[in-house]
Length: 231
Ligand SMILES: Nc1nc2c(ncn2[C@@H]2O[C@H](COP(=O)(O)OP(=O)(O)O)[C@@H](O)[C@H]2O)c(=O)[nH]1
Ligand SMILES: [Mg+2]
Image (cartoon, rainbow, N blue to C red; front, side):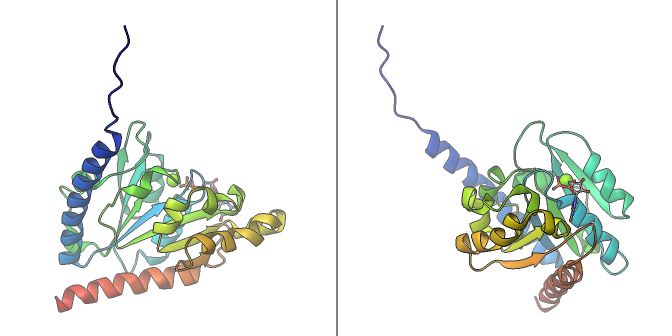
């Protein structure tokens, strides 16, 4: 028997799912704004150094600012354990194979959290450079991390993520002497995709570039708090 081929409705379904997500993200954004909480969504491939950068940031700023961390991973609480050891509260979301976080997951994780006492929420998204791009989490800024070890071609291969990001952190600069090609071409390739990126070049091992990153994070948190005071 020959079956009649029905037209695919994939795009329609996907649109309605992301529209529902956009509504939920809008509600989160209003909630964060009311409390003056600055929210950062960190995206990268696995191993670029998202958790390492959050560990360093928490360690450096924990005496001045209360930073809440949401960790997204398919399995395990290894990353939230690392953050807790640095003295910050971390909430773990296990997506059980899902390749990105969505706004409903963030809302659920924050159900019993009093945001009054929180200066910033850092969201470590599930490690990959493709899936998280379409999913708004109510963040103020999106940060894409690229480790030099991943090669310089990633911005060209994953333009969705690099074009929506506000900030690029090029991490593992301590390895630049061993990776001259990546060191030379990663930034030009990223700026080709998104010339408006704010760029930091860091090493979470030797600490280079981290002071400018901390200053930027502090500035963002203070501005968000100030915006709340005027509201
Ligand atoms: N050489 C070097 N290694 C780093 C740096 N940042 C992180 N790493 C290492 O890279 C690996 C992955 O880091 P992790 O923070 O878990 O990456 P994530 O998967 O993006 O959260 C770990 O072995 C880190 O110690 C860095 O700046 N330089
Ligand atoms: Mg991690």
